[in-house]
Image 1 (tube, rainbow, N blue to C red):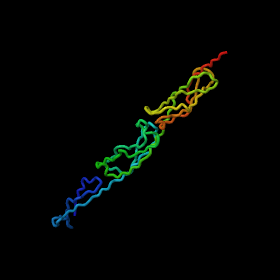
Image 2 (spheres, one colour):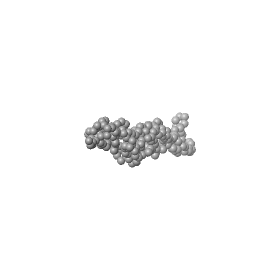
Image 3 (cartoon, rainbow, N blue to C red):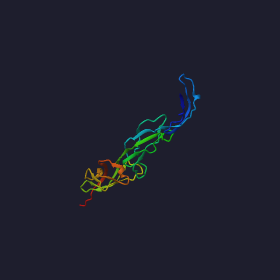
Image 4 (tube, rainbow, N blue to C red):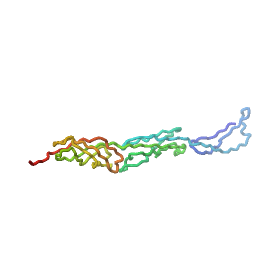
Length: 231
């Protein structure tokens, strides 16, 4: 005998009812003897299991202020024209402006990543493995240090009045602490535009954890005026 079953449209995962459309019965000589039989047809089930995929987020390391790629790999097979859509999400702390992820460790999550398969992604069983996003503090440098001019006093000590940094993200809440800074003239003698070496600055503000101040001394200048003596 020869039978025909219509499987047209049975693409998506799930349980589908299958019906025999026609049966032709032949005898040993190849003659059609279907008419000699009273045939009845019963439906059956066709079970299509979901294809299995594992998606692995890729760990990344960036510097505060940079953008993460958010890439991933997968094992398993996407069939036909099926494809991934959407992107991974990042779960982490934000800066004071709520515009950038703060320095530290964030986590890649599945976010809006999905499979376009004509069945709402339901043809696949997806296991997702997240990964860390390491965000390093951004190095910034002093851009200006103001030193108080002084009258000759026989020593090289200098007083820091203020300091500014360059390289910070616009709008971040950050300032330079000068109270613990040390500065000294390279010469104790009176003169103009004498070199001053300053160091020991620190940062303060809500966003200080997102930055690291470049180490080393900052070179600037100030004046030492002559001391007045009456003889």
